Length: 405
Image (cartoon, rainbow, N blue to C red):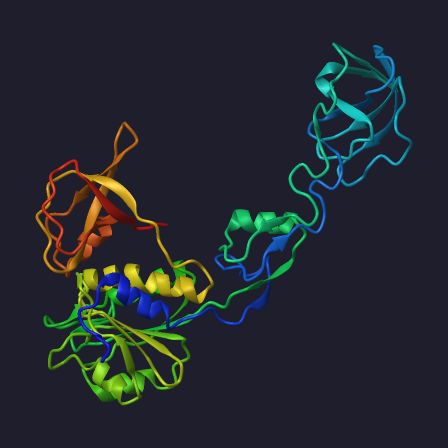
């Protein structure tokens, strides 16, 4: 029988990732709602950029061949979008050019600060220009057919600018997974709700997860929190349109932990039941017969958010065709740490940059899984392997940066 409980973090993540794959690519316009989407095809240039030899300065185009003289006859003008259409200038002739305009063949540019003009006669100070002076060569940025963006990259403003400059108005991208978020518990009320009782707490997990899902490229589908009732849980999830359901709370084994028993009635197949993780041991994952995946997160805020960083983020990446691995960085401990127990421990920490370029990690003394304020102040999660020995201050540890906006 396959073991489902007390799995190492890496094995649990691998089981989850094995259950997801990118969706069918869709064609979108790159000037509308493309930010954050992931390319399902490479972007290649449809022409050279720039498509002509372009002037980098305001000035005068002069031929490189012929005798350099002080005086030149002005024979035309080249402006951005309105190129000079006549024959290329010969010795003693010049064309007025502006920044971004086409430069006639065989010419360099003399900046206007070196020129004095009277009617159609121009005089230049100094020596003749060198080959290519103040000219942006055709194809100097990229050439037609060159792959500029590979499949699997996420589009940001700079990559969209590159795609647009390459002449691409649309592209195939992977679909964004829809993620339904369901918080459970008699004590949970929506932030801003009027007159909560002393026995109730505001839902911090829902807003945090909605924001993280959007930040990681998914489409959050927030659901109203429900009480501890199998019937209420099933009613909330009935017909919900989402590829992934994330439940918050009800993930352990208490009398009121009813999410898994409720979903068992829908045919839930568990792949992960508990994880050798601190905080976040009750995190679980399974599949439903209708193809939906379900990630169960603990209700304690720190537990749920640590588990979201370690499992939800890579799941959303894999769904969008992105490498789900996240590289860990290194930092030096600012304070000593005790040995860890049998579970892998991810500790919230504040990072400080040092004068020598290194980074020190100050782990918060109180790592209680209920503390939202500590997570809000943290810059990173310091990873301590299961069974790790005590560490002295100054020793190097692995850490995962928390990406702030």
